[in-house]
Image 1 (cartoon, helix red, strand yellow):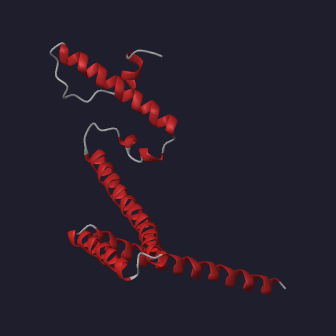
Image 2: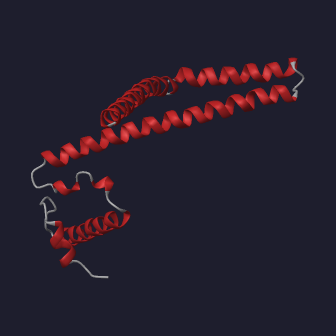
Image 3: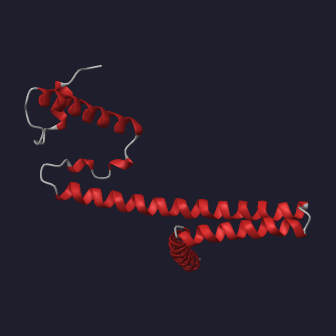
Length: 169
């Protein structure tokens, strides 16, 4: 009985691994197609193609006497293309956001005097982000005051001290 249970558990784990592997494969295909489509959709030729399709559709209206079927064709095509492009654009924006975030993290990591805790900041709660934004706002105010006094703003002040020195709510 125990052996049967172990064999069932192993087959279940194997099935989970197989499903995860297939999901990754599907995601790779989607990513590849999304990259290709977003690249092609950004080309001037895509605009000309869309204009040409609309022109052909309008001209076919004379042949089909501007019937409901004629209208349904363009409405359906526009809806399908819009939904597909929504996912393509979102995928592209997510990919670019991640790449930019990684580049910024590398700049923070490599810059002497930078606050390494700022890496991965996008995962913080809204309250934490607001608190940090307030610290940087106070730093900007202090820097403006220092500039008015003739001081330079090329130093790297400690953000923690700025909050204690700045005005309180």
